[in-house]
Length: 580
Image (cartoon, rainbow, N blue to C red; front, side):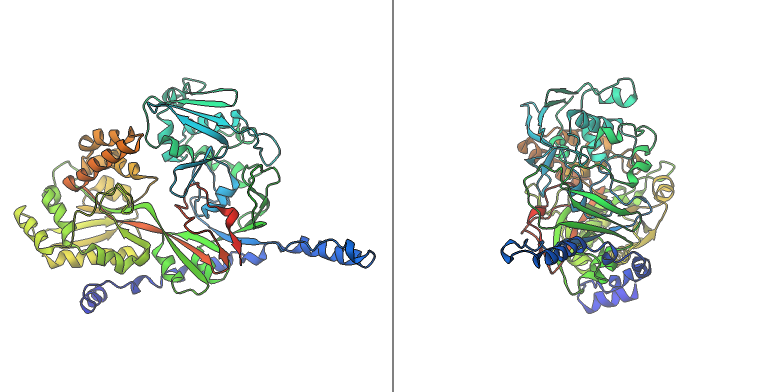
C-alpha cells in the first residue's frame, strides 16, 4: 500500500503497472517442460523426401520433364494452456469454442449451423445454406447444405443436426449455458429435458428443411445458432447425456477421430501436442496458405512466447500483458469483448437483517463518484481494459454513455446526506488472485480513504462459503464473461445473488423485454431502459470491461480487422492468413 500511495502522490494519481509486471515468472519452469513446437514431427519431411526423389529421377530424364519442386510447408504453431478443469487436449465444441486453446483452432475443426462474423452476428451459410425468421420471431427455418461430409467420408445429415440440438436440450449441466438458454425457448424443451418426451416437439425436419418453433421470440436465438457446432451422431450417439457433466467428461473426447472443418487431427501425442492438416473431405472453396497447425500443451501462453514456441495466442490476463508488451517479435491487437468486472453490493446479512452501510442508493453511487476510474483503469490495465458504466460495451451504438465521473466532493456530500457511518470499515471480497486485482483494491482503498471511508479488500478462494453463505461483506468484486448484453442483465435474476441484491423483482420485466427484443428497434429501446435502471439502482456497478489481447509473431500476416471474441465461433478469415 505504501508503494501504491507513493506512486499515486508522485505521479498525480496516475497508477503504475510496475506491480504486475513480474508475475508470470512462477510459471516458467512448468511451461518449459512442455515440448517446444519444433519437437513435433518436422513439417518438411515429406517435401524433402519428394524433392530427393525428384532429384534422382532428374538424372535419368530430360530436363524439360522434371517435376516442379514441392511447395514449402507453412506451419502455424499455437499452444493450448493446460487447465485442471479440462485434462483433455481438445476443446469439446458443445461446451466452449476455446477453453484455453486459440479459438481459431476450434473454428477450423468444426462447422457450425451458420457462420458468424467477428461481431458474432449471423453472416454466412455454413452447414445450413439459408435461414429465415418469421415475422413474429417464433419460427426459424434453415436448409441443410448436402455437400458437407465428415472427415471419415460420411455425409453430414439432418439426423446429425437434430441429434446435436437435442443433446443441448438434454442439458446435463456442463453444456454451453448461453446456447442452452436459447434452447429453453424451443417448444417441447421442458418435456424432453425432463425425460417425458422422446424428442423435442418444436424441432422437426422435412427433407433438407429444418423447422424450429419457439414458445416466445428470443432476441439472441439466431445469433446463438452460430455457436452450434454439429457433431456426428454415428460417433457420439451412444455417449451418455443426463448425469452431471457426463457428456463433456466422457473419455471419447481424448481423441477427435471425426470432425467437419477444413482441418483435421492427423497426429496426437496426448498431453504433449497434436497436428492438424487439411481435411480432404472438406467441401468448402477456401484455399488455405497454411498446410499444418501444430498445437502444443503449455502452462502459460506468454511463457511459451518467450521461448518462441507459439506464433499466436489470445489472453485477457494482465500478467500476460506485462510479459508480452516488451517482448520483441510480437504484435498486439486489442479486441473489446463482453467481459465485465463489477462491484456487487450486499444489502443483507446472512440472518436477513439489512446492512445500513450500503442500503441507501446514495451511498452506493457515492462509491462510483469517489474513485477516478479512468486513471485507475488506465494505470493498472493500460490497453487491456476499457471503462464501461452499464451492461453495454462502451463501443456499442446502444451504449447510453457514462453516468458517473470523478467527483470526490459530490461523493462526500452524498455520504453525509445518507448518514453514512464513517466508523464502519467497508469489507470487499474478491476472488481474482492476480497482482492487477490487488492493485485495484489498493486504489479503491486510496480514493475512498480520501473522503474518510475505510475500505478493506479481502481475498477469498471459497466464494460459496464467504460470499453466498457467509454474507459478512458489504461489496464484492466479481467478473462476468458474457456472450452479449443480455447475459449481463440476466445477472440481476440469478437465484444465488438474490439474498444479497434483491434485484429480481425490480428487473425481471425489463429483462424479459430484452429477451423478446428480436428486432434492432426493440433491442435499442430495451437496452436504454435497462441502462437507466443500472444507474437508478446501483446495486451492480460495472466499472470496466476487459480487452482480449491478440498476440501475433511479426511474420504472421492476417487481414485487417479480422479478430473478434476468440472464445466463440466466428469467421477468422483464416484463408487470408499467411507467413512472410
